[in-house]
Each structure stands twice: as C-alpha cells, then as structure tokens.
Image 1 (cartoon, helix red, strand yellow):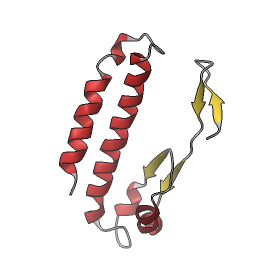
Image 2: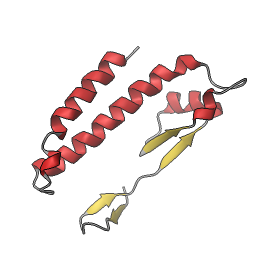
Image 3: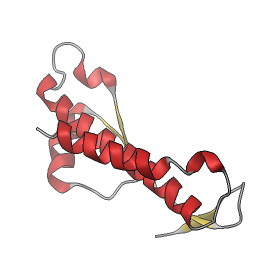
Length: 108
C-alpha cells in the first residue's frame, strides 16, 4: 500500500481511500467486499420510493460498530507502542474490546 507522510508526524501513514456507497451498488459491495479504507453510507439511500429496504440497516450497524472498534484499537496500539504519549489513549483498548463485543451482539 502506498504510504504518505502525516502533517503532525514524520511517520508514514497508509494512504487509503473510501467510497460513498449508494443504493444501486450495495449488493455488489456486500458480495465483493472490496478493500476500502472507509464507507460513507448515504442516508438518502433509505428515503422514499426506490431506496433500499430498511432490512439492510442492521448490516451497516454491525459494520460501522466494527470499524469504530478497529479505529480505537489502532489508536491504542500506537499508545501501547509508545508512538504517542497522550494518556487519553490509555483506555482505548478497553473501548475497542467493548465495541467488538457490541458489534458481535448486534450481528443478525
């Protein structure tokens, strides 16, 4: 993966791109599970006629919860490795565990 340099640090960070996921592409996204950095779910996908069935929302609830857990885990890992000294990050590991458990409990 291509690396870029962060402004606040000279350590390389992974360059990743996300996508805006619109209703017509949902099923292909779920089937292929592309390697993307993040997914923006457009709320208009669920408004009015032609929008996605609300039955798809649990999938995104689990997916979003899991992704947030990964973010906390990555922050905690950097703290644990001494790459940051901010004490506010000390509890992120437990926060990640709680979100992983929550994602698992929300799984349909």
